Length: 533
Image (cartoon, rainbow, N blue to C red; front, side, top):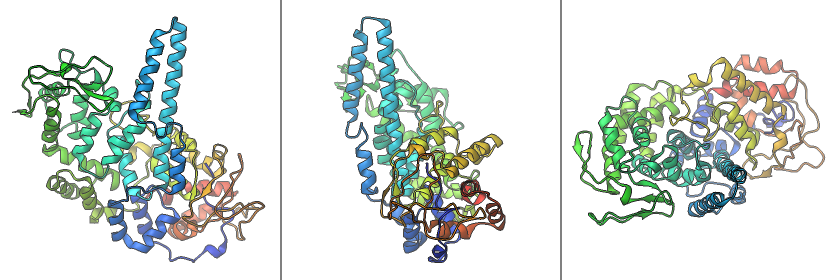
């Protein structure tokens, strides 16, 4: 992790006043719709204005990544490996382990396979973070993170680490701005969810209610969503036979003539499905076999509690801890009118006066804090090593795919404003400000999106940003070598364009008391203006 901006060292006074400053409300609005402001998003916002910017974010392009980031993702070791190929690899390795002659050899081989799963999970996190940092579809990236947290899975269970990249790409990302129904069906049939909540073991005569209960309680209706234990049991029977290839030999159902269905990894096994009659919310299901799930999900989503639960959770994430009932009601009406169209629900929430009134009052969760610091620090440059970000998120108790319980990380600010949490955040801010995490970061490459930072030759006065150009031996536009363990001095107008005009007199005074550029950076990251948006 490199040091934030040129904050205390090398921003030139010539950078002041070159752009019309955005208001604090505009900055908070842009921050809410993205994972943090950088020069590219600021330039686009200025050119479009709020309304057109929001329209563009609600209809993002198919590929919204700069070529450098696409290349970085394509060079990950597991890039290009399909889920069926990954599944075949894991099955083959498990088969080899079963044939090993000794318990010690089996233990060593299992540990090696677990390490491979951990490496695959680390790559999935890198893909997610690179897209969050550099995706031009900033709102969509926030939705991907939101839904991954909503339909949460834990990387440490079973073989889930191997499935995470595909889960993010095909179960979540493909439907993040689509219809809620498609998200539910996609996650229900993905191996990551099937293994995490044990539905791969759910079969006629061996009923496992775990996923059925969480599907109702956590994914669709909420704890007080009006369902009963009978509904949980019925849904568990609907979900019998939904599992993975290789768990048990697949068989058809001679009575109904239904054959197994598979995509190469997921398997609906008619031989494990309960074809008996079922009643959900007091009404019988008409479908049989595989089609029962779609009918059940449609019925669940039509329950009044579903729209209320999902819209309120979106409002908590985008607006505030206790969203106004009138705002939620309008979002619920949109959800019902559009059959759960997430894009239209967001349009309702983000154009509401309640959303505008909330700007500057919402506390950043760890994911937003870390990504916004990176986007500010590496403005316009590509950083391909995301391990420092992953470690920072773990430090702040929001590690990607790290929530063991299926409820996902909390969305309310109270979870991150305790004295312990604030102390951890200050520690992370100090590490960023001091360049202590820069050792893990390779030289960055220009993306051409903003003013390219260079290296600087002096630390500047302790009272604030120094004047004078940031030019040092070997520096060139758009490339900033990161000294191992050193303080990277950057040259960037983003601070003066977007941050400085929003600072209070108290924050300016505090920054003026800094005794070093590194401390100045840390104080800015810890300031209310940076943490509230």
